Structures are given as structure tokens and as C-alpha cells.
Image (cartoon, rainbow, N blue to C red; front, side, top):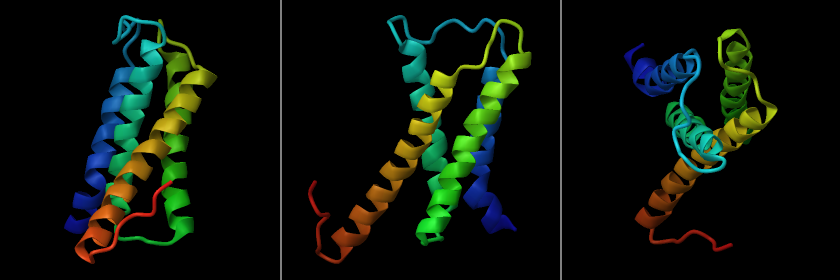
Amino acid sequence: MIDTLIAWGPAAAWAVVLFLLSGQGDLPSPLAFPYGDKLAHLGLYTVLGALLAWGGRSRGSAAQHERIILVGVFYGATDEVHQLWVVGRSASLTDFLVDAVGVTLGYAILQRFWLARALGSTGRSLPSG
């Protein structure tokens, strides 16, 4: 039980943060330049993807990795739907797509980091390209 909480708790806590942020109407754009809101979405969901990778770190099959990423992508979709009921907010396909890219990117970054560490401890290196 405690192992599960340690593994998945950070991702669940971050999902709550995302839910609370998307529940606030008329949020000012976090970055004052064109597409700054998209960059914010990318960053927030990259964190979610990395935390999902943390939760699933002991599972190694490709199908399991795909399922974990899909959980994050599904959460991004539900977050956009949630915004339909928040005054001053709206659902956006573009935001959803950026969220999905962020989840995948965060997951991949952490997986690549762990692979590099594992290979480094054996004296091997990551393939380039």
C-alpha cells in the first residue's frame, strides 16, 4: 500500500493541481507572448508525464508504457471537458493536443534518463540519433 502511494501519489497530486488550475475562470495568460498558454500547457503536462513514468517505473513492457501514457492523455481530455463548465474557460482541441504531447514528452524524458543511467552503470552508452 505504501509503495503504491509513493509510486503514484505524486502523479495523483499533480492531477489535482491541474484540476484546480483548470477550475479557475478567467486565468491570465501565464506567459505574455504569442502561444504562451500553449507553452504553459506543454510544461504542466510534461510534468504529469514524468510523474506517470515515476509511478510506472517498475513496469517494463511496451504495452504497459503505452497504457500509462494513455492515462495521461485521457486525463488531458477530461481536463478540457471539465473546462466546458467553468465560467470564462472553454475546451480546446489544440490545448488537448499540446497536453498529449507534453505527457508523452515527460514520460519519454524520464525513461531516457533512466536508460542512460542504467547503461552508464554498465559502461555502455545510448545509441545516437
